[in-house]
Length: 312
Image (cartoon, rainbow, N blue to C red; front, top):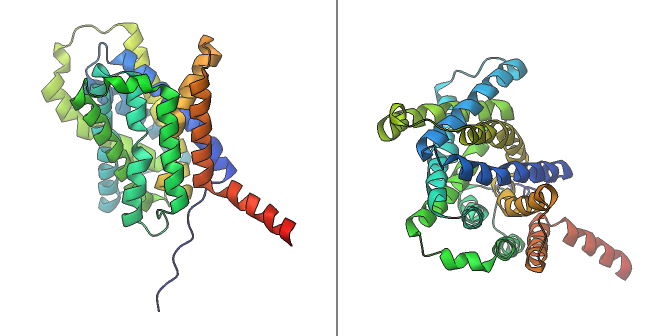
């Protein structure tokens, strides 16, 4: 007798609010990274980001949940997640942003859900690909391209290695999100702290060998503060929110945040920098909203109930 297939994972209102907040934090990370890499090498920046964030979360974790688990299997899981979620993608993204614009970087980053839905379909029982989800993902990605501006795609062949680096980072995020679900019973602060601690350890030897921090010239204030902002807000706080959504809603839903990141960046520009919004940006946001609604499924279920009551 075969066991019933688990119910598909869905998003609650709280999960959507967390996802929106996360998109604001990670949307700002592209700006902070662009400022920081002007003077801080990519590996050193990645190491600084995860190390500062880990120190913040160690204090919080000790206060909230007590000492860490000491099992060898648990720390191995932290190490794998650290490599997939932090060490590899951060280094690749920061190196890529030396050569390509923030807008193009965010478009390539938005391929994460596309990778995730394929990997999750084969690797999980409750995060399967459905026709509605596939349509929603395609609509969301088209919305990102329209939102950022098709003119950016003219630069797509200018720095091929940088663009490949961003795509590999997106694939790495997808694999990391799926692997991290095996720890969903743990408190988010414990997972985030363990992951970032191991990411610091993984990156340290590469920083020493490749960058040689003692040979770097003095770094000015703006890049340093950008790195601190990346660590505290865009990493420590953001991963607490991310693992909360991941544990409840699954990898594919959690990485929908990459569709919202460009929306957050543009809205922040309007609110903080008095920038104006263009018609194509409204069209892109509408396409993303349609894609997210299709993936979520609740609007379709609501309409179906209304139609059913009308016909009865």
